[in-house]
Image 1: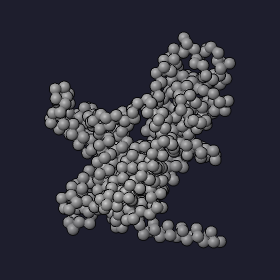
Image 2: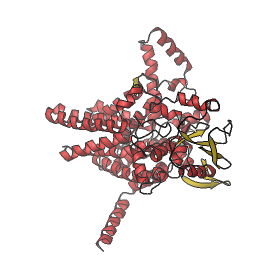
Image 3: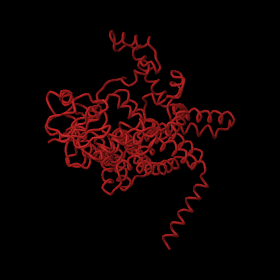
Image 4: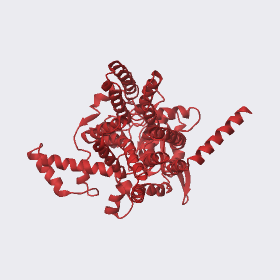
Length: 558
């Protein structure tokens, strides 16, 4: 009876909270529709127009299959293996969430359920709580909390403006951009990393940090970096900046050194445990200095802010004087357009910062956030990443996360302004200009198609039940879906992700292309031949057919 009474009491408390916080509850529900709508329908089995199979939306298709492959096949031996390049150890990649999904599979929760449904729902619930607590610590006003939640869950870029201009339609998904608030679950690792990230922000709101606070802060940094290296780097800087102001400027040298050292050890431990930097660095530095590489497409690409005359002027100035002030001005224009495009309506946050600086300066916590925004922006525009060079844009996702605070502050000040009518009109306009991509997202979330047909699901089920062995999928696939569903290592697949983890697949690609001459590489036990697209002979030496359906042939080494 006591358990029932406690449960009833808890439910009444929740009900009272919802009734007393209608705006916040409304934002939570709408946020769930927008954010979870783009992921929870994935991984489900549908029948559409007499065709059945599993649906995985195009925006998730490549990356989710890679993570499902990791969860289903990478951790079956130690050291952990790259699922799409047999024999190569997993290195330089944030596999922590995939390891959790692997463990959940051991208690009979399928990886596809964990990835697309369980973890997103749990993550969103935790994020709602942490964001709410953090906002309340900043300002207890429900108006401010509402403004902050609005940008955290719905903040978006100005991609829809460009899509309307160039394509006369809402086609914002065509544009590469930093991770936006309303699309956080397009990258599950990023979304999950936000929970410990906000946990750290909450801890830093304490005026004094106890030993327990410091331990929890280190744990939050450890988890953030484990889920997403980019977030770990940004949070590490943010914490050190907080310590700099909290301790060093107040001449508390011992606390500054001891606390900074402890936090640094947590960060270093994460890097060593999850990213194996000693092995990963053998294929070259992860990041290299290449200023403005990411921002130049702003004026070069025809579907962005195409300015051909300035592009030609930039190339000319680079050839005659790389230190020209005019060249710098052109580069900074690209940076400005990049910032405006990605920030969207969050750009109002810069007006808040400028106004605060003019009127007397930022508060301590605001200095920490602003300096971290500057740091992450510099990382984005000055570096490129090994393999997929533009991946540094993921740093900027955390820039936008922190910009939500300043944008919320500006919007909050509008709504409490004495000039009610003008301020409210401007505030509502900001909200309306934020919503188009969210509306587009909800519409797209309910579109359906068959991504992996039933025939292939049956074939991969057969392959999964066969004894362990390396699989060669023919023709070569640019995703890891065979490993994801068969739970077996592949000889070679998904060249794109291999470049990110620093593996050169050139030789294996050549070997597979010459398979009719050189034969199947030794060590390959199974051939998974997808009939559509395969132009080679079906009679392959030393292999016999053990399964065939209209779409797939599976062969095993004799």
